[in-house]
Amino acid sequence: MWLMRQAGRYLPEYRELRARHEFWDMVRTPELAVEVTLQPLRRMAVDAAIVFCDILVIPEAMGAGVRYGDGGPVLERPFRDAEDLERLADVDVERDVGYLAEAVRGLCAEVHPDRAVIGFAGAPLTLAAYLVEGGPSRDLRHLKALAYRRPDLARDLLAGLADKVVDLLRMQVRAGADLVQVFDSWAGLLSPDDYRELALPAVRRVMRGLERSGVPRVLYLRGAASHLPAAATAGAEVLAIDQSLSLSDARRIVGPGVALQGNLDPAELLGPEERIRRRVAAMIDAAGEGGYVVNLGQGVVPDLPVAGVEAFVDAVVSR
Ligand code: CP3
Image 1 (tube, rainbow, N blue to C red):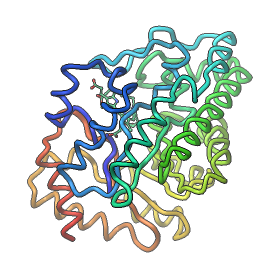
Image 2 (image 1 turned 45 degrees about the vertical axis):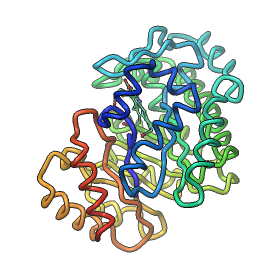
Image 3 (image 1 turned 60 degrees about the vertical axis):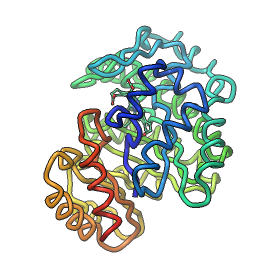
Image 4 (image 1 turned 90 degrees about the vertical axis):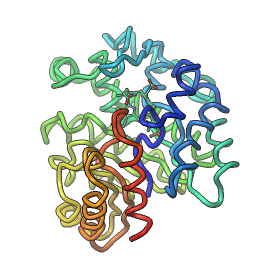
C-alpha cells in the first residue's frame, strides 16, 4: 500500500519547506527531495516511498520552461514543430536529470530494506499532451490536431519521448528503485481508437525498454474504464486504475495474471472515518484473486485533510 502524490501540499511539513524553496530547486536538490519523500513515511505505515520529483522533468530538460500555477503546470515554450524534436533528442537523462538518480540512492539508503522505493515517469502520451497543449487541457485539441494533420510528427514525438522515459526509468532502477510506475494521466481523453493508435504503441515501447530491468512495471491510467482491455496488452505487470471502474470489473477484464492497483476515489477521504473504513474493506474484497496493491484512484490533492489520508492508511493496516 502507498498513495499517489504521497508527498505534497496536503502535508503542513511539506508546505513549510516549500515556503522556503522553489519547487524545481526542491526536485533538483537530492537532500530536499529525500526529506520530502520521507515526510509521509514518518506519519503513515505505507509500504513504499515514491521519490519526490515530477513527470514533467523531461519537458523541463528540453527547455520548455515548466511553471506550476494554481491551475496546474504551464509550459512557456510548448512543442510546435519538427525542430522541437531536436530539443528532445538533445536531452541526456544522466546529465540533465542526474539529481534524480542521486535522490533515489539517498532514499534507498534511508528506507531499505523495510520499505520499497518507487521510481516513476510520465507516459509518452501524457508528456506529449503537456508539451503540445502547453498545460492542462479539457480535450487535448492541439495534440489531436497534430496527430490527425501530421501523424508522422506526432509518432516521432511519442517515440522520442518513449525513449527518454526508458532512459529515465532505467536510471532510477540502476540507482536502486524496486519498481517503476508510468503515469498516463491524460489517456482518458482519447477515444479507444486513438488510444490504440497513439498512446499504446508508445507505452509498449516503454515497457519493452524495461523488460530486462528486473523490476515490476506499473502502468497507471486515468480514464481506465475505456482503455483497460487495450492497456492490459502493454506489457506491464501491474495496471493501476482510477475510480472510473470497479476493481471487480477490472479483474474480470485483465484476469488473474496481471496485478491491479487502486482505486479509491480520493474524495472519499473527505468523508467520516467510519465510511472510509467501510469503503476500504469493500475495495480490498473487490480486488479478487491475483496481485493487488492498495492505492487511491488519483493523487492526493492539496485540500484533502491529513486525517482522512491517515484514516485510509489505518483502515488498510488494521484490516
Ligand atoms: O509523492 C509523490 O507522489 C511523488 C511526487 C509526484 C509529484 N508529481 C510531485 C508534485 C508525482 C508522482 C507526481 C506525478 C504527476 N505530476 C502527475 C501524474 C499523477 C497524476 O496526478 O495524474 C501529473 C499529471 C503531474 C503534473 C503536475 N505537477 C501537476 C498537475 C502539478 C500541480 C498540481 C498539484 O498537485 O499541486 C504538479 C506539481 C507538483 N508535482 C507538486 C508536487 C508535490 C506541487 C508543487 C508545489 O508545491 O507547488
